[in-house]
Image (tube, rainbow, N blue to C red):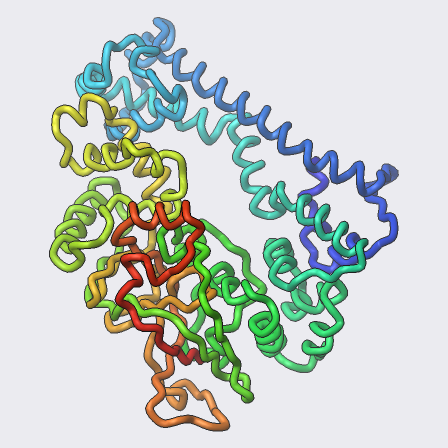
Length: 508
């Protein structure tokens, strides 16, 4: 299935060819197959990828076990080069990657503390073992095949075939597709001309949508995006959520309105400016918000209702560094939250963002809380006895680091705390626009200062630009979970929103 990662599959115009064709066939060289057979094979590729993952894991664990054999130990006893000691935390984390549970016993140690003691007593030996683990995890032929598959999935997601199945069925039933479903399904696809990200899918939407977006290659790409986003906001209930999904940094003084999506980008979890991982709190739930978004006649301003979590009072920018540098910041932030946001959720929950929806975070025994306490050195002896240090390091690498890396922690003057994409400043408002799913960072601005010309400007209106997106910690997660079980009947009943007034935002 290497074929499906060829550039042809990443081109936006291919979508219309495939979905609108009566009975398309897929070919490569002299081999041609019906579209149904091709999609079945595509779906099966996910199963085959699992086989690669199993072989990768098997070779990784076998290579680690080999380092405990006499022949390997004799080689290390006479090293040809001097190696630097490796952090015990990194070593434990790699061992857990290789064996998961009970790895100390599998390696011949009675407990993790005995294993840690052995690492401290034999730093050269364990540094050599760590080199073997790194090679098997990232540099061996099987490891490269494994990581290549993961990287290819970022180009053409393996689930893309589901979008093709569903969309073809919808169109064959003489129904049109929504812009939101198409743009989410095709966000990884590319076009030479940015305008074709929209023009290349117009054949799949309703006639009304096509009429509102005239094809014009004489205008700049961004001015193709403005009428597209305007149509989406007016006609598709979940349209505003696209902005908090397809977002990256953009020049603050760019003339294109900040409520307009840049349709050329994809939701890249590795980009610190992307807010995809910043969810998992009460503000991200499917509440029944009363949406009233409107676009001004001059196409410059989005007026819409929402809530305010307050203005940013203090910021802590997560500095790139080793684990100890992060842990120092976590302790400082914990003191800041205790002082400024006493009702906010425990810090570990804020730091894990989207992982709040995972199994471990929902476990009533809160294993992640225990891991975090061990990580920052705030645990008692009983917690340490049931929470291996490796689990704590693993939590940092898997659950915390992807959320905080390159981002910023903030507290507001209303006692809320959270994590934002980097372009946040003191004085910005953390606002929740109804229908946008994620809280946004809104910066006060004078239209004239950024060259925005309006037909009519009412006195007393404060305009904002969207500059970033944020995760805001919940103040009563237990109550929120109960409301979730009840179907989220009324957002005004939730502790975080109960005393908030609905306000009007004007976004330019």
